[in-house]
Image (cartoon, rainbow, N blue to C red; front, side):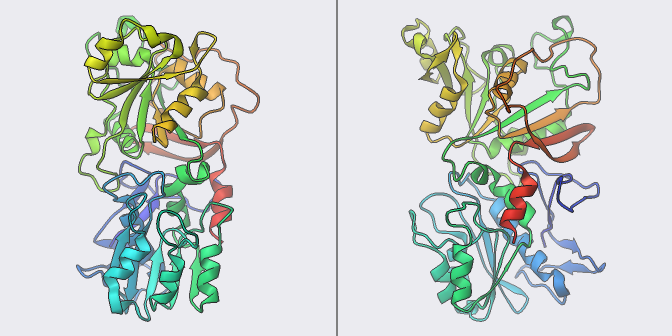
Length: 430
């Protein structure tokens, strides 16, 4: 039996969590075999997905399985949201499904197809409201209504205000009982990039920084190795970062990081783990004038360069090393970061993770382009070294809400969102 919960505490949400083993990825914990119920019972789930008498916690029990399916997708489903569903009859799971991206069947359809005739009189658990509009595939709500299920438990409404509630309303009008809100926080965490960007009308930007207690990104040059990257944070923190990379279409660094570290920008530390997609992100670095020809630690890779670099003599060497060069507009002699985001989005890269040093990070923050800031803080004071530069932000650019706090080994983790997670959760869970 899976247990799904958010890592840390969601500010504004009544969900304080005890210390527990964290998994990388989207911030979800999925623990199979056993689950502790509020009344002290231990629920068990067997190979057929059956649960005994667990009272009011049955909905949380089966929604956890649906969330586990959504989080364990083999590929990133962006620009569609990850969704999982299970059909339960007589306390037993008789159908499972997960959505794997545009043009593929929706989770509800797959779960109902597997359940077949056993869907009659059953309950459907789904992590996102069944759609009632036509996109690349037909709407799900009519299929659910016609399947024979009598009750639907929905973790959260569709975050799109233009269609929110339409699927649930359709199901109720056709005589089904619909309950909303079980597992809503975990479900919203899964689809957060989709929710924040109104279905990726623009790219989602997540910034990861790792600093010392006194705000240093690295020790002074004299105390750094010339042959290996400097890690301030623990392997536990790096595993979380690798999990986030697997949920990102592209991981982006600046030229300085590319030159100093030639990073792989992959998710190798979480290869084979549950709760993270199996596909790697595109590795990207920014280089306004194409002065660096050494590439990254793996190929193929992508380089975003300024328009003036179209005639650079280094183009051939970069392409020979496996680099795709994409050009974007410049501003005051440097890449315009809004243009960089547009260029990446234009190539179908919807969820972007930036792991830049202080210059790139401060520029993104100052421009107001960051949706989520994942801030790791190592328990060490360097006293000197590479710190934040002084950058004047645009009006309102520095405004975030603290969504949750947690730990990764000995390191602290703070997750800040520009859009209030708690406010959005309130909108979609009722």
